[in-house]
Image (tube, rainbow, N blue to C red):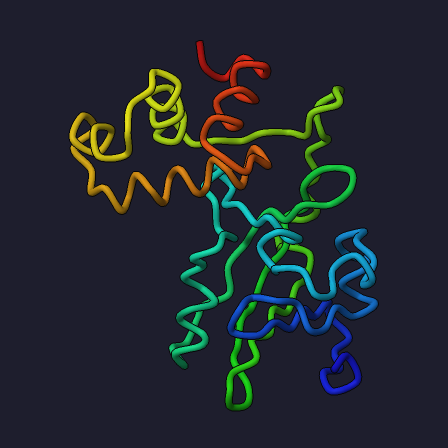
Length: 190
């Protein structure tokens, strides 16, 4: 599959399940992630894209990938992607090709230059949750259900569940209980 898509820029190709099909040498150089570690994994797990303000871009319900799969035009955007040494700001252009669709992300250093934020000096990776996610996490720590959290924060229950999914992803947790335990250990919640 990698031979099918050639680009001088960093190129990531993934299918409708968001599984990475191609990760070229330029992507290895830009992200510091070898193709062997990326291929077959979900693109959002590897890239971990975030907006400059910390908002999650890459996640299981990725709207960029969904829009591209539905053949909508997606504008190039600046995204901070995960690297082994921190985050790097890249310009990400997204297009869909073939049928069934294969989604291509073309990545280049963002116009404002390289932005690298080193990881925290600890055994835990850097954690970046939005203020709303921290509220949801605190309420989970208080033992509240998604429905109660939705009522308390005047949000749709689906929105709360999306926040919970993003929290689990960011903390690398498999359950809400594990996420709360990690958050307490990191001092994110009381």
